[in-house]
Image (cartoon, rainbow, N blue to C red; front, side):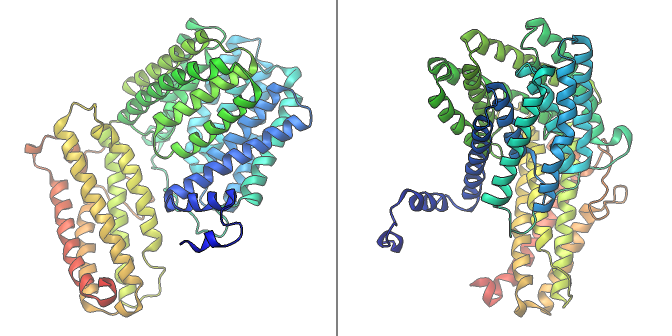
Length: 527
């Protein structure tokens, strides 16, 4: 019998909750904790705003600020997260004020909104902090349209935002500091380039075109709710880098919206703004948004759409026709995104995938080099930080290749080839993790067999990662987005065209299997 059940309090709700979360496994447990913390932080923000007597619209605005602060701030260290959180008002307050003062001037308001769209996407060139500040600024303009914020409401809205931000920071950094004491999260540097060769610059122009189309078409559908089309177009561009990624994300957004609207008809309409059930459903939606975000964009949008329906009911404006209009506006926004990535400075899927595959293979090369250095008696940090970086890069490769392996993709040859590449890279990652574990064993140092195997792997990866015309130095630079490179050809060409990239990847796989044999003969590795 579990010892915890014999102890006093072993069956208390808190004790059972802890054991339930722990039973989810490390990754699910982490997502569950982050999601639960979000519910607590946003709930605290709403409670504080209501307790000081702020009106309902300001309280909703405060809850949105808390949600954004907990959702968008993703710097690798706790200190950097705190600094980004502190900078959010500097990015959001001027935009909110601008939106409020232009509320009755449609042409100026629309121009300002599109300027915020461009600046918000362009800011992603500065990494996680730029991404968070850009999203926060955009959402402040969006929220001003959603809540119809006018100049006379600015003081209470500013107050709600500051109180909510303080509540979110208190929850994140004091009450439930999940990241405190943990190793800094590795961060992947954005793809570089100059001018229009920089992906974030291209995407800023694409988002501008998409949101401009969505704004005009959305206003043709509704002069009151047009901003939903702009919001749909904007969010489709978040965390995408190619035409294929944007198309898949647009499809998933529409799918999540449709299912969320169906749930809204079944839940939000009957509840009709009743406070207690509305708050309970919104809390569940917040948990679902944070839990589903790393896993499924469709599920995340399901929870976002249902939450918005509940908030409309709380504000007293919900009716079935409004939910139908939301679907139409979302479809318009998705169409705008599709047209923009197809016609405005397009970045093909295989060109974007090429960059991330090369960076992943280069990271494998660095892992092997640093492991070889440790096995030779070097005093460096070892390959562990690079292994963590490799996991992030492989996640980015999977996201980039997702359009090719999507179930609805009609390109069977490219789908099969992309799956082969993913399988080979996953095998590389598994072997590199085993190599790192062996290199960390003090008894394995100065083992000539392991050192020689590391050198063979390093040479094999080096030939693939650093071709003569596209050298990547330390992950700081990357080949141009539109370069024609072997790995891109492996994904873009039919099997009969001769895939030099896959030949090299198979050679790398063989070299890593050769490395695995001496590792398994080591007593501690075998154990």
